Length: 262
Image 1 (cartoon, rainbow, N blue to C red):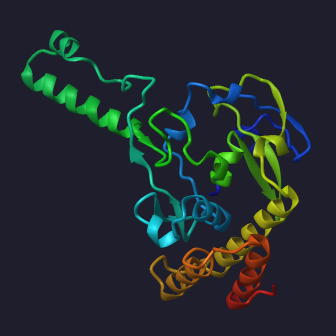
Image 2: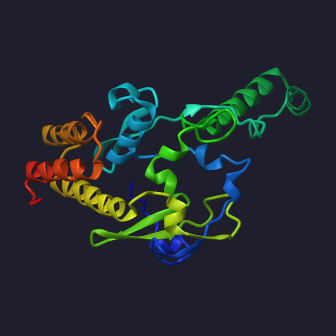
Image 3: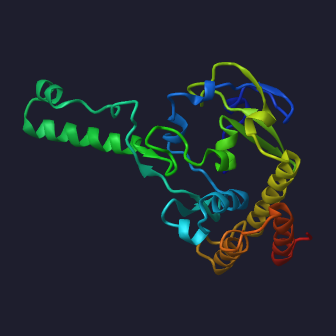
């Protein structure tokens, strides 16, 4: 998902490679699940769906509308994690005064009711969390979590079809400054293949968006391309051994379908 902030606004101003050390240690995130409760849009790429299918034994269709939903992301319909309301076991709901406080600080019954309703609405907004966050505040799919979750609080800065890693400042509440190598933080086997996949997927989506520039959001062409991408990369059988090889074949087909060379 594109963000409008500049690299200088988002990060510490530095670019990193997979072999660089970054001050990103979090002490294993003990006692913290803030990033799972911030209401972020976690866009899922085909590898994320492949990993969820492999771990949970559920297809994309089975996960849809349970833990995954479809949203328009930068002009394309893509799957995202479906946030749900969950209580934080470590904290009382922020901003919700108890009944005694309400009675002492409001002038009449109608004011008390209004204040309580507003507080409850605020608590509901803050209670939205990742559907895979456990009751203990830990990730239940940690070894198979989406790429965006693996990155956080790192991000990617894209330029000319390639990317470098950045450290997003003022994001993580638990970063203690311990230096960790980027590739260790990501914990992804065959990182070179994964990074190549990220570039290829990014190029495919960028090509689709260029094709749709200026098109009406409800146009037949936009709907046709979005449905095709969903069928080609999500509503398909990912029960394969060689994800990267199969993805490369499907991507080549998609580039030809869109009218671009593969």
